[in-house]
Amino acid sequence: MFGLFKKFQAGFAKTVSALAGKTAALFGHKAVDAAALAEIEEALYSADFGVETTGEILAEIKTAVRKDPGLQGRQAAELGAAVLARVLAGSEGRIEGGARPPAALAAENTTGCLVPPATPTVIALIGVNGSGKTTTAAKLGWRLKQEGHTVMLAACDTFRAAAVEQLKAWAGRLDLEIVASRTGADSAAVAFDAMQAARVRGRDFLLVDTAGRLHTKVNLMEELAKIRRVLQKHDPAAPHHAWLVVDGSLGGNSVEQARVFHKSFGLTGLVVTKLDGTSRGGALAAIWRELRLPIYFIGLGEQPEDLQPFKVGSYARAVFGLEDKQD
Ligand SMILES: Nc1nc2c(ncn2[C@@H]2O[C@H](COP(=O)(O)OP(=O)(O)O)[C@@H](O)[C@H]2O)c(=O)[nH]1
Ligand SMILES: [Mg+2]
Image (cartoon, rainbow, N blue to C red; front, side, top):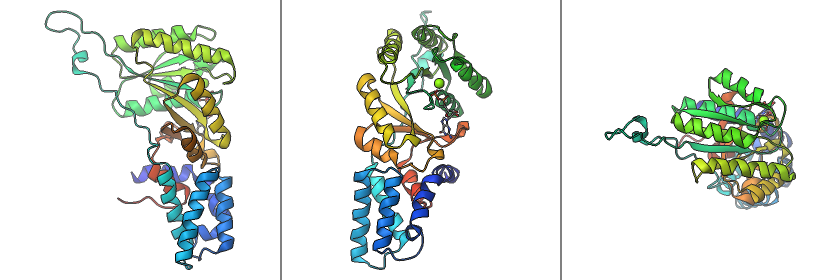
């Protein structure tokens, strides 16, 4: 757990330094005065926490300062983290499934009939080009495998040149099973084949990487709808998860992107990437406030272990530069 929190701290270092850099009082042992309050407010805005969350954090700190004019920066940070955790309550996405029914493990039952193959939990990763879908598919596959699940990848971005090769390279590096065709192939056919293979081989998870042309393009939405339809030929409940992979460094713009995809495709959750390279780590709160879509994972770097399950408490404390709570 300690190591995990360190990853959060390191990942959000830029957001923290943006907060701390502007407001020494927030992280020092100096009393919080009017000037410090103004700095805290500005820092929260520039980290893209959004108007409401910034307002709530400020209100709470101001109330505390009124009660205790000697309130110190560190205490203000504790208050801020608590308000943020409250704002994000319920936003942690957790994957259900992955466990195969025991019957599926046996090739034959006592009557000699073939046991129908188990259906994998299907996770479709969607989003615009460059948001991190392909790397997320690979990192997530690696994580699930570490946890003892069997995983298959489906290379359904057949649009962008080299996209298939990119996922294949990851699969090779991380020793993950993959179903892929070539650039220009029908992405829905790849999805169908991958689902078939995952079922026959009894895999726990199928992770579907998709193409990401601009979300305003009708074609992309049609292609995604087609992928969904062919998956549903195998399992009417598939995909069990449709996650938007969104670049967290876009800050407030990521909210707009999520809104558009949610409206056209019906999302079940989010993966927010590239939070390590940005000082705008507060956008998570703004996205949650607006869309109420659970955040399953966050990307804090380019290595497989840098994809981390989203943990409200750790996030809230990390962005305020506080150590994790030992409870
Ligand atoms: N620093 C950092 N880079 C990331 C993260 N996630 C993805 N990337 C990088 O973003 C770029 C685009 O990722 P890719 O998976 O190809 O995006 P796609 O077009 O949505 O499939 C690649 O260079 C990734 O290594 C992250 O969490 N942190
Ligand atoms: Mg890709």
